[in-house]
Structures are given as C-alpha cells and as structure tokens.
Length: 218
Length: 242
Image 1 (tube, rainbow over the protein chains, first blue to last red):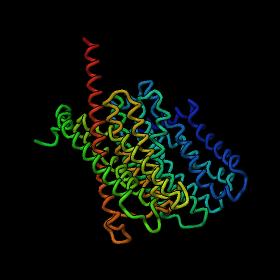
Image 2 (cartoon, chains in turn blue, green):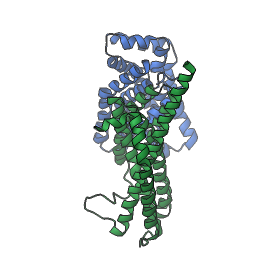
Image 3 (cartoon, helix red, strand yellow):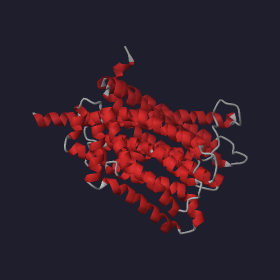
Image 4 (cartoon, each protein chain N blue to C red):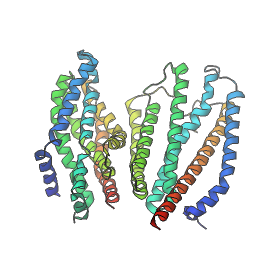
C-alpha cells in the first residue's frame, strides 16, 4: 500500500499537470474575486473565508477525474482490483495521494492568499486548521465520485454534478470555522463537526468507492 | 405468498395493471376534492388573506419530494440486496417525479414568499436544503442517463443513492447550523405549539393523500413503461441475433 502511495505521488510529480494545476487554479480564483467585487478591504475581509473555501473546493474538484482515469485506461486498475491488498485499501491510498498532491499544497498556500483577501488576523490559524481538517474529506468524497464515473468517456462534467452536492456539509462547517475564527468567536463546535465529517468519510466511503469500482470493472 | 412475488416483472405487470385504474381514479378524486375544498371552501386567513391557500400545493409537494427520495432509497437497497430488476426500475421511475415535486414546492414557496416575506428567495435552512435535494436528484438522474449498461447503471445509482442520503441528511442539519431561517416550523407536527385550525387542516390532509396517490400512480405508470422499454430492447436484440 505504501508502494502504491509512492507510485501515485511520483506519477503526479513527474508526469506533470496535476500537481501544480490545482494550486494555480486556487491562486487565479483568489485574484479574480477582488477584480469582480471591487477592492474594498472591508468587503473582502467579510467574504474571504467563503471565497477561500469555495476556491479550495473547486481546485480539488479539478483534478478528481485523474484519480482513476489513467489507471483505467492502461489497465492497472484491473491489476489493483485483483491484487492481494483489499481494493478498499488501494482506494484509500489513491485518495491520500490525491490529498497530498492537491489538498496539502492548498493548505500551505492558503495563508498567503488569505493575505490577498485581507482576512482578519484571528482567521489565519483557523483557516489552516479547517483546511487541514476538511480537505481530506474533499479528497475521499471526490474519490467516491471518481469511482462512480470511471467507466464513462466524458465523466468530468457529470463528476462535478455528483460530487458538489456531497461537498455541502464540509463547505458549510469549514467556512464557518474560518468565519468564527476571523471574528474572534469560539470555533469548537464547527471544528468538531468538520472533524467528524472527515473521519466518518475516511472510515466509510472507501467501501462505497471500492464497490463502485468493482461494478465498473465487471 | 410473499411480497417478493411481485418482483417478478410478469406478476408485477399483471397486478399493477389491475391496480392502476383504481389508483388513477382515487388520485384524481382526492386531489381535486382536496384542492377544491382548500381553494374555494376555506375562509381567508385574517393575516395572510387568500395567499395562505397555496399551502394545499406547497406542503403536499414538499412532503412527496422527500418521500420520493426515501422510496428511491428503499428501492435501491432492495435492488442491491435482492437484485430484483423491478425495484431498480421503480427507483429510476421515481426520480423525475421527485424532481417535479421539489420544483413545485420551491416555486409555490417563492410565489407565497413574495407577498409574505417580501422576497422570492431567502437563504433559509429549509429552502436551501430543498435546493440541495434538487441537486441530489439531478446528479442521480444524470448518472442513470450517462451509463449504457442497465445493470451497471442500477448498481452505481443505488450506491450513489445510499451515500447521497447520508450526505443529504447531513446537509439538512448543516444548513440549520449555518443560518437561522424565516420559514415557520412544522404546521402539522404532534408536538405542542402554534397549530393550524381544523378548517384548514382537513382539506390539507385530503390534498396530501391526493399527492401521495398521484405519486404512486405516476411511479407505477413510469415503472411499467420502463419494463416495456426493456422488453422491446430484448426483443430487438433477439431479432438481430436470429
């Protein structure tokens, strides 16, 4: 399973495309918003938590169809499905590799982009914390969506239609943590709920994803 | 004699064919009676005037929008566990009906909200969760349409329905947390509090029964159509073979 993780990471870094793309999209998104709504610092500070979270979510969505598509094309997905390690484990590793190549860079870049959006001082810690807690859920849920659409030729658009509604709870609690943090309120409740969603998704969704892949490979 | 006998498409077609006229008639009668009673024979509300009467469309449609999803969930589980094709087709047949009910609830709500709240739309928890439910319906039907092999499509949509139900429920409570709303609480719940008067409640019950019967009728018709479409496909395939 470690070998699989390392293979996916190496592929993502060396084959190009996936690694920096999400991050660049996140940056562009954050640059475009002030151009659209105007440069007033106060307004930007108010919408910054939401923009940063929606940006992270869309950046994550961008690379989802790559999780299984290439492996499906060259047949290595069939090998993974018949390999001695459980498919559920393989799926979890795939999700983890996706998180390490898209989610983690987003978490690290978010404070700088928060600066661009004039995020209030108290928000930075909670921005990083909520993204670090929430983006794994985005990757795991996205892996489920990718597993559902793996057999389709043009699954990309359908994938976003399937996955975005599933992202709603994560987005709500994640943005709420940052908003409360920025206003200096207590963040415990949304933070715990966010952690609950992430842990629950990691624990249960790989079974659904593996089932979807088995159906698709039938 | 168990309920699973109706999972046999032939048996299902026979029984549903016999039951369908009854359901159609009853649905028409209760729906017309409930709506007529509600629209014309109840007094105007002293604060809301006659706008209150849209409740006879809004509440039953909203109820059926949720119940249609629950029915799809049950049908999906039956398909996954027992692999009865009728079950999968019924789930598929229910989705567009559910979408329509969701849209009716959203639109009547907007029409009522304009004079009452002064706005067509507010990001209220109930309104928002209905919009999210609508998105779930869209994704579900889109997945059905996208996959060619019928068994694969049935399997994948069932898995999506299971996972989606969990997340739809989560979203329902998440939006509660996110915004306190304008929408009034449950008008029909058994918990103590402000309640509707019997004059308004009885036609509402009739209308709700009407919508439920209408839903059953539509799902039966659509399921029968799906079964027939599948039979035609099988016949065509056989013709090409031989």
